[in-house]
Amino acid sequence: MEEVAGTVKRLRPHWMGPGEESMKRNGWKTGGTLAASLLMIFVMMWPTKSMAQATVASIHGHVNDPLGQAITSGDVKLTTDRTSPANERKYAYTFPLDANGDYKGSGITPGSYVVIVFQGSKSLDFNDSVTLSAGDDKVVDFDMSRKEYIDKMTPDEKKQLEEYKKKNAAAVSANAQIKNLNAALIQARADTKAGNFDPAIKSMQAATVAKPDEPILWIALADAQIGSAQAAVKAARAAGSPTTSPDIKQKFDDAITSYKKAIELNAASKKANPSTAAAAYNQLGLAYGTQGDAKDASDAYEEAAKADPTHAGMYYYNEAATLYNAGKLDEAGAAADKAIAADPNRADAYYIKGQSLIPKATVDPKTQKIVAPPGCVEAYQKYLELAPDGAHAADVKGILTGIGEQIKSSYRAGRKR
Image (cartoon, rainbow, N blue to C red; front, top):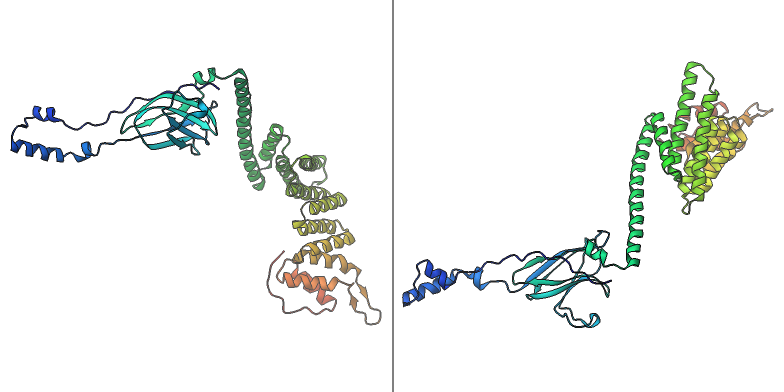
C-alpha cells in the first residue's frame, strides 16, 4: 500500500525569558558596577524560565484503521532518514500502540521527522513532515479512514475493505438483535414466574420468529405455554368444568410442540448443551404427565436423566412421582430406586418407594400380623431419618405403627427433600 501523509496540528509557542533590550525599555542601566550587580541579580530571579528551558520534545496520538477502529498492536516510529530504502531505514524512536490505539513518547531531540505506523515489518501509514521543537508535546493522529488514504488503496484492498464493512455491519446488527432478545427473554421469564402468561407467550413467539434456531427461546415460550395450560386447568376445576376440554388440551399440545422444537434444535447444534436438553425433556415430562400420559412422561424424564446425569436424582424422582400419581405403582417403585441410586439423600424418593410397596403387604395367617414386603419398612424408616419433620412424616409414622413396626426415636430434624 502506498504511504499517505497525515495531518499535523500547529506548534504551540514556548515562553521566552527577558533579554537585555527589554530590560533597557523598563529603565534598567547596564553601564556601572552597581548596574552589573543588579543585572546579575535579575537574571538569577528567572531560573525556571530561562536556565530550565526544555531541550527535548514529546509526541502522542491515536491510530485507527480504514474502518475507524483502533489499531491496538504495532508501533509508531520516528526517523529523519528520508533517502534510504525502506528496508534499510534507521529509526531514532519507537513507541508502542496500547490497547486503545494510543501511543506516546518523550525525550525526542528536536527536528523534522517522518512518523510511520508499523504492524510488524509492514508500514501502514505515515506523516512525512512532523517538526518537533524543544518543549513541544505534539499530537499526531493517524486516521486511515480518511478519503486520501482510501483513494490510495489498490482495487483488491478496496474490495476487501467493503466486504469487511458488510460483515462488520452484519455482526453489529446481530449483536443488537441478541441484546434485544436477551432483554425479551429476561422479561418473559419474569412474566411467566409472575403468572402473566399471555405477554410472555406473545413476546417469545415474536422472539422465535426473529431467531428460530435458538433452543432457549423455544423453552421460554413452552414454559409460558405450559403455565397458561396449568392455570386453565386450575380455573376449570374451580368452576367445576372439565379439565380435558379441547382448549386446555391445545394449550398443552402447544407447550409440547415448543419443547420438542427446543430439543430438536439443541441436538442439531454444533455445540449441543446437555443442560438445555435436560431442561426441555424434564418440562416435556411435566406436560405429558399433567395430561395423564404417564408413558410419554416417563420416557421424557429418562431422557432428561441421560442428558444431565449430575441431576439424574431429580429427574428420576419426577418420573417416580408422575407414575405414582398415575397409579402405576410398580413402575413408580422402579423409578424411585433409580432416584435413590442417583441421590441417596432424596427423602421423597424413599417415600414413593414405600408407598409403591405397601399395597403388597400380606397378613400372616398364624399371627394375623401385617407383613410388609421386603424393602418397604426400610424405605419408610429412611424417609423419617432424612426428613423427620417432612410433609409425609405423620403418614409414615402412622403406617409403621399400623403394621406393628417400631419407629426409631433417634431421628432429628434435617433436610426436607
